Amino acid sequence: MTQSLEDYLEMVSFLSDESEVRVTDIASRLEVSKPSVLTALKTLEEQGLIEHERYRTVRLTPEGAVQAAKIRDRHSFLTSFLQDVVGVSAENAEKDACKMEHLLSEETLKKMKALVKTKKKSTTSP
Image (cartoon, rainbow, N blue to C red; front, top):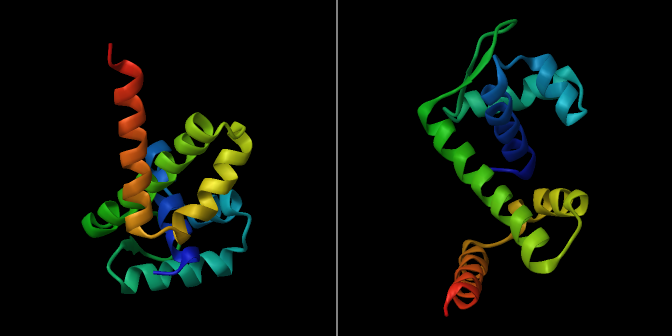
């Protein structure tokens, strides 16, 4: 899946936490045009990750929800890592995490998580 499609899927997930998801909401939050959103949604629908009928709401399929949760988990972890471990400002951590979540290998992410676990253990041990 492309970085762009991951961003759309992640945004559908975020917005669905708040209310019904509409094309206009996605376009507004991602600062893209409605036609761009429709093109991405069509691809995500073809991949079985969302359901969308024209002029209606957008919903994640069960598989889409799983994929979106993975993307959100990566994003959340990276944001926290950059803020708490590296000391980056909240604003930059959010921006950088959004870029990094698409580029890091699974191996690198696992190693980063292990590093955080080790660091937590060493700070909580007597």
